[in-house]
Image (cartoon, rainbow, N blue to C red; front, side, top):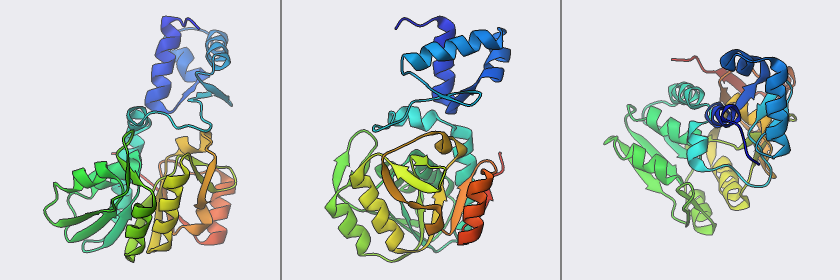
Length: 255
């Protein structure tokens, strides 16, 4: 469908921030909330956005959005989460990092650590950590997924199963209301399962934007984790699930 310049700006904001809210857009563009609701309705009818209470988010379903767009989604929140996650990891630790833009941010936050050994199927994270001369980096091998620099498949799983590390740091594409961690690619999820099985401690890095998305493949549950690092206080149902299962929540402080 043809879209107006304002609707184009709304889409750009959604890609940058993960979600857009009616009240905020009304103030930003100096138009009524009814006008913004009409814009969002048209964008949702065109399947460019999905409605949520009070606003809209990027559509999700059986395919993920592009990696560069994901890098821009909630970028500040991801950096804050990465710093908080890095603070949980001591010097001299061994760890897994899986595929994702938030785990990529964790790699950046670990550049000042010493004596690390990092096993990863995330080529972007490996390249970042190569700048840390005190960090040993092990790439899993596997089939290269060109869209995001991920290594997947049996070889990646076999490599991971050769290690037993201190900490697994994983991301997820979506986080369901019942606490399930979700992703889009069954091959990537197989790698994530192996990572969780071969680590003594598991940390999820996931911002609140993941609560507004859906994906078809289950990685596991918040109850399978030791720590969830996020950017704002989670809903009461997820806080209760974490409390009952012993999963600690860390809310990252902005820079």
